[in-house]
Length: 408
Image (cartoon, rainbow, N blue to C red):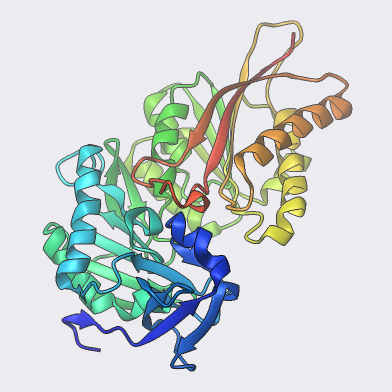
């Protein structure tokens, strides 16, 4: 493929039932909406011109025939040249937005999401930035095949980015551009030093979406904090930095993640107040008798497909019921405990998660004999550098609640 542009290599013609998708400018088109392709043997990741049922060209898209989600719309202007200027403009627009959020070089937060896939008109592409290093997660073959052009566009749109690692997520294949950077790689979040383990860690090496929630939860009064599914414990470390008399227990099943947590805690001078325990969260909650003033529960996605939604909701209910049982509350003392609970499962809708909390509180009362008084203080979302596209509600994957728990 020439490095200067990405060629359009075929056509995809849609059925009449795709008309509502086109009208609503939804960036996804599923395989069952496709009438035919030309040529018939279009390959994974090729860029195609999309035609409506009347034969009118309407868009350019990356084609993924192996997936039910066959087309991801790159632009609704079907004769656009997908050259360096196109990709640079997309990334420059994304970077301009992030600058309005007071994040990036020269600010207290140098780890942030630069490109959030469909929400930034870059479907199938996530770019997280740590200082001068970009980690690009390509979820489609089309974005992976565009990596050379994308790195040129990154360097043009964001001159502070010196290096980038591109990962084709389905295959774990990687390609690195620019001067070598170590892993873990230090960066700042609200002035606190964290480590992005971009080679061995999860996702891009850190969970940037919880940045604003970490700062919000640090304002909750607590002496003893339980951090479940902690990874490298950024919730705990942020809390300890803001609350010098607090202590935290971080639970994770990964020894490597907890080693990273200990190293980060040492860097930030809170290692004496952070205890790391390798355990499965469900097992720990079943076995411990300890009580906590604040519990943070941020599990991985329990369901990635609609057919697993009901099972996932049962698991969330059990998990949150166990958390409620471990909160330090009293019927005789005026003590309020707090639960910050999250789901990053796209198929779990906010109303599902709200209903799950009802069942968790109710079943907690059945088990303990006393139904706790649970108040929703805030609904929590991803940080604003993870925007939601109005035409793409599926992008709103992270939802959470901050609850106050006590007995009347």
